[in-house]
Length: 312
Image (tube, rainbow, N blue to C red; front, side):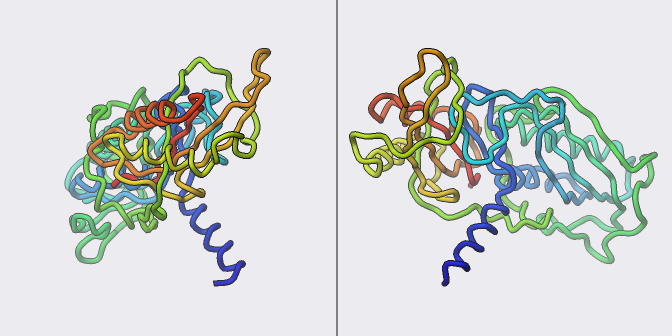
């Protein structure tokens, strides 16, 4: 493979990840790829009979409530703040569309809450009717598929939208996300989760100054490769971590950053870890534990950021 082919493949992989979404709150120092989160949410709505969801997106809710992260974020990651889930759906006309939309909304909000995403709005748009119930996990319907256009019985303008706090009435708790499988293909994504490899993360306290700029090269002292290996081993030992990944680079990357503030003149070591979490665990909680484990395992208690690239 040529260098150009390698660059093209890397670009396609990066674009396929979608946005890097804040996981948990401003003090959690964790993010999750939109592709990984979308797979979990689509897996949850696949259990709602007589529906097909597509075009699902997750992003800022537009309220302007974004905050500065307490640790250097991954490249181009969204800042911590409230999120909105948007999606189109088609449904079998065997009941009012607002009722069906309510079931979908509860499933999406519950799955988002189970991951640890701070979703405050779930916006749904009815775009068609199905003549038959979709085959579970297939993303398509039996028979001729859709009929009609936008809207349908029980929907005056084809749009259904509500907003709330922490999942807008979601049914999920802070434990598992419920059904991470069977979601691929409903929104055109391939559901892949990136390549595997070793990594690690953790959370030093939430009161430290916010970082600015990109991290500098690796710190002096112990070789960065050795520190990265220790970080990866510490992350893998945390319950709920299924494997380390290497979507944006090495599974664990060690660098330096220069905190802001009057007393923050010396650079601080910083570690970014990429990993996959188990589907029966809250991703945000696993990330918090990983941050603590990695910071405790390395000298000088570095700041740690976690990027969840897959939910297995």
